[in-house]
Length: 635
Ligand code: WT7
Image 1 (cartoon, rainbow, N blue to C red):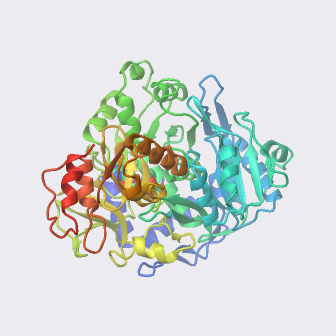
Image 2: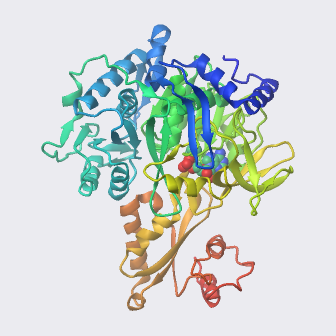
Image 3: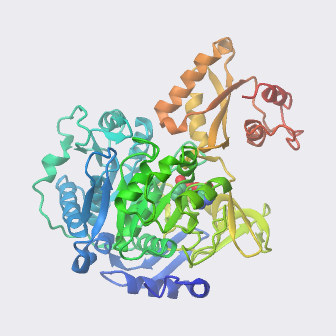
């Protein structure tokens, strides 16, 4: 264990105090002791949050893959790096050692290089959760190409938007991907997407499902044709600490997704630090994060955090419900998982099932449990604690975001106190604060406000790809020189934080971050629709569901509403992917608007949540009369 990682409560407080008193010394000392740098930095931190201009380990040179793989080969070459558990439990699992991972990543890197890819080029990865996805991520990092992983559940339209935004030259995909009993035709979705992407010159196609595909001449190549003869050695590109490592898209309050940019040095340091601190990983632990690599959780806590710490990390291709609702627990037993990190939505779904699904498996290997992605309700927390942890595993409720790169507020397993439904205390180096509506910091205890972070940390996003103005506007303008998270939070008398949820136009459905504007844009494309307003409302398993209020054009008002509902739902599903589908659609004569023409979502949120007794002041509305019929006709 490192002296920088808390080992008990008093060391947590002392590290926290050091990290706030002298952040440059704290992070500089940690980074120097714990990583391999090709050249040291000139400055640990050079930052002006008013611009914002953020540089960590300025002037340093490194390659993150040397830190995630090569440096472990001396002593831990035979240690398992990745345990791959396939979708189908009858297919064999794979244990991939650090030595094998090294060779496979090198071959993949040489393969991508052989197409002409070089430092700074963007490579889109649209792949199932198979080891080759991990190889491709690390291969890009090794040669300095910037990876942009797009979750393989996204539609052709979402994929092409992301490819075009980042001007990706290369795409790596597969013929298909398994998800439970379904096969997603990834190659044909890619083909559809690429009809509107002129930037892409080459596509590598991995064979996974034996789905029939069309190969485009001079553009498409099979992974196995290109990969098999590649050399086992590959020089790592020398990267500046502030060179871009990856772009990852997240939803925003306009229709256009935001390509969050993370850079090599700071991201590596904090992914490693937070992984070791929060989970208290010990060298023989088997650690399993159930997220997909298409989300930041997979980037930081399946790949970069665990591998940089020399850990054994499980990669699961499937879903919790296949072949039955006991799959998670069967995988825990099979691989003797010690640390399990999953999402509240999965916990709620599994808690609904007959308890025999849990009790049929031996869960005695578990020692730490984690959650991420949305607030966890008390009932789900208690079920997780009692039925899965058998009352003896600490639960780390980890609050963070795509933008923060790593866990910000969370218990440290077995070190700091857990409190159900609270993310509790900030990690060393993280300085959260609560702000009131007038832009003042709330310094009292027992307070509620908008959650900001008031000092830089190493893995913070540096910009939105191609749009620094939007980056500043979204995150650094509501409260000047502070990072605004978009979340509301409460703080108790002991400084513990409880996240209350988004305060902007983002809704979290089954742990997926959805921008309501993006969904509205699609609904508005339907020829019968004038306008729509999308809000979230509480759902017992998914956390939130989507409710769409829609007004129709005069000449469409007579159309059959059931047919329209189906058409709109499938339009959203086709354009954005099934996770964005509205659960309820209500046709209305008008939407409540302010005099400046802005839709009053506050009212619609209440209607959707069935809280209809108090709308507050609606006298400022342009059309207060529409509210009554919206309430009467609510679903
Ligand atoms: C939003 C970020 C962090 C990786 C997965 C999601 C919500 C996340 C928690 C938590 C309450 C949480 C926030 C945040 N969120 N973790 N432990 N408790 N809310 O990343 O897609 O960027 O979403 O997820 O609202 O802003 P993301």
